[in-house]
Length: 118
Image (tube, rainbow, N blue to C red):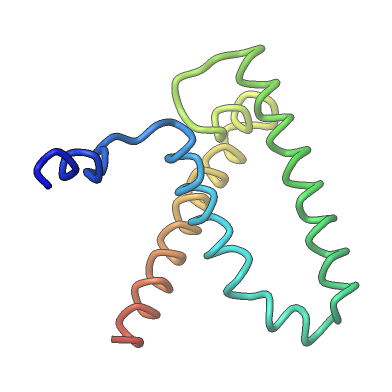
C-alpha cells in the first residue's frame, strides 16, 4: 500500500504551455463569453461571426504593425512613443492618457461587477 502513494502525487510545476492556456482562457472568458449573448441577439449568429472575424483581423494587423515598429525601432516605453515620434508630441500625450483611462475604466467596471455579484 505504501509503494503506491508516491505514484498519485501531483507535480507542482507549470510549463509554458500551461501558462499559455491559462492566459488564453482568461482572455477568451472576459472578452468573448461575457458579451457574446448580446452580440448574437443583435446581429444573429452569422453577423456575430463576421463581426468577430473582422475585429480579429483588425487586431491582428495592429499587433503586426506594432511588432514591426518595435523590431525596427526598439524604445523603452509604451506604444505611445511611436505616436509621439511619427505624429507629434500632443498625439503621443493623448494616446498615453487615453490608454491609462481605458484601463482605469475597465478596472472600475470589473470591480463593480465583482462587488455586484457578491
